[in-house]
Image (cartoon, rainbow, N blue to C red; front, top):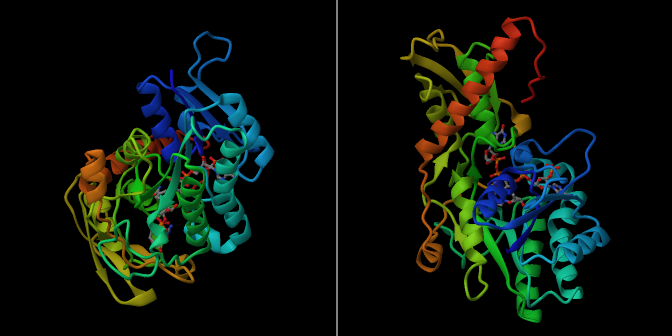
Length: 370
Ligand code: NDP
Ligand code: GDR
């Protein structure tokens, strides 16, 4: 039975990847951080009572800032594959915590590679590094490929640039099986609530249900190549099943603005929007409602700009060319953007219908944060 170790198992991708690897018969080990509240909600359905027999899903306490802890876990597990997904993954927050982000996202990658090397596991353990389209940053060439020059635009992007190159360096210096997946944005109903897609689908669901009036956003012009996380974790696994290690772009090849993503999300509940005005004065206004369940007054301003959500330096346009991955890994995404938005909106409508039901019944519900 193959053993995999996943850092960041409690995150969006960690949860989908754990499910995928369990379905393929792996024993899956994950590193979770100690937190004052439970942070395993996304993988609780995979939890097995450690007192049972044939346990194939195990969690270890750890942190990417702690070399000794990582080395001990890797020594204990002796993994065939490590997926390094753990990171401070929010671009805007990285401007507020640049040192921490560099430590975890940059040096954390080094700690994993060096632990595998020092433990003498270079011939056994294959490593996947979660690299990102944020490496491209300032637009120099589109669509972006494995050969497009990097120019990161945030402390997150710069930390991930170190992670990218240290992975390449260990591959070349020590002959390690280490791959970079340069993944473009990927989303799902499990997406963190402060990333723009999930922020939009949550707010659109709440506004449609009459639980919220306005969605505040930053830059509506930014364009992203959005795919589904379920498709993307499959590509991670495929990279480690090849004969030789390499780096691959994973993307859909379709780019969409934040503004158009907002329209698509509201359209799922039959609400048509039009955007008027410019800059911080731009607003998204309801023009029609076709679903009798979700009726809002025509002219209602449901989207407004809050300059606090703007970033000191922005990545304007991402669109990936995944030809290499299609040819070498035989990978193509199964979901398109409309299907992704539908799945996210359905999940958030269900979530907030439940909350509304509880609230209308006089019960306490969770606090909502933008
Ligand atoms: P999430 O933010 O959903 O998950 C991040 C995970 O990393 C969580 O499990 C988190 O733990 C963990 N983590 C954070 N800090 C540490 C630390 N100091 N030590 C150990 N673990 C830590 O990210 P995604 O699942 O969306 O992304 C997975 C990886 O892929 C990340 O590295 C991200 O940067 C990268 N990536 C993501 C893309 C995307 O569009 N989703 C695109 C390209 C790259 P906790 O739950 O306790 O917070
Ligand atoms: P990104 O994702 O920065 O691309 O990083 P995010 O969803 O945060 O932003 C996408 C774009 O939307 C614009 N935007 C807003 N973003 C947020 N979060 N909140 C807002 O209110 C808002 N308004 C507009 C942003 O300016 C940006 O242009 C994600 C993360 O998952 C990274 O870890 C990963 O590496 C990259 O995707 C690929």
